Image (cartoon, rainbow, N blue to C red; front, side, top):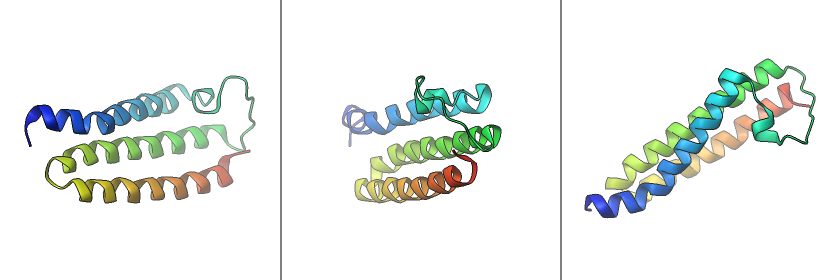
Length: 104
């Protein structure tokens, strides 16, 4: 696989990693939960600080998984798809648990 072909194939996972990384940093550093819930939705959290900390870590996890997908995609495209699907399922389960524990 050539460099041009690889970049066109891995563009979406790299873009996804960048977006997730941006929001993860925004949540972890600034505790800006309105960036993921919307500015018009005023939610009350059981523990807003822990919600932001956990949400930021989970988004960093998915961002890292997306970068790993882009790397694995170079050699094993099917393995990359399996890896990201497993990580999305893990992310979804952990996000649900986090929301039940610290959410509204």
